Image 1 (cartoon, rainbow, N blue to C red):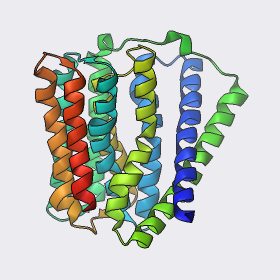
Image 2: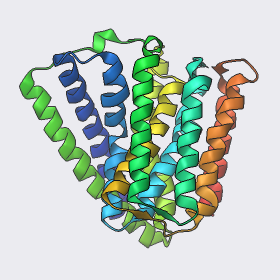
Image 3: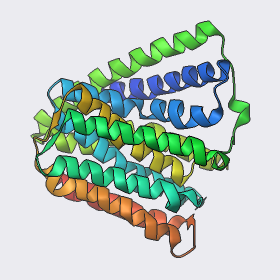
Length: 312
């Protein structure tokens, strides 16, 4: 009961902290007149992936590398198999051409690069983390230079320039909430794993990964219910790219990450590659460049199968 409470409170702090950090970051960017394209692809991406980043770095530093890896791999699977599935079950998504020209290829390159780095020696080294972060930087430069026209400000009414004291306050309490939430979540997750006799990897790839994907799920559902196209396939694929290249890249630069549970290498990374590849045919069939409820069912069944086989 105590471990479950720690996980719930930790997740609540992570979600609230991410929201406060996002508010302060956007307000600061607007006050400094930074273009929205830069805000969306850097500040917002970082803020929404902050829970994954904080949890993975903290887990790696505390000696729980399988929690760090399981969190990111599980989050990438959950983003597509759960978040995207629920979103398209509530309403179809029109896919932009940038999906097959840029977003999906980069996600697959990032996924294959990570799998190649970790598969053969079971360690994500510092120099490999540096390569991943450099690749993310090149990707962002490419987006800023060649895909500006693809970015649409769909909610201009949300542009609020906060007073300086509020910006600093949100930044401070957001960072504190993220750190505190990560402490509680990891303590609860490790305790839960010990209580039920399961590995850190299984807790990381199910409970922790879904928890850190809750902000994306909430935002996606709210956007669909409000009939706003604030969510797109590109946003979730971008989140997956950021999780791999930034979260694991930065975490491994701080401290090399060693795989403890071989299930991550023999099973989990292949599930991640499988669902990442599955998105491509689903986007084109049966209706070109659109994801509908049938695609959502396929993705949800894929995710259910993954969870069922993982916890067996």
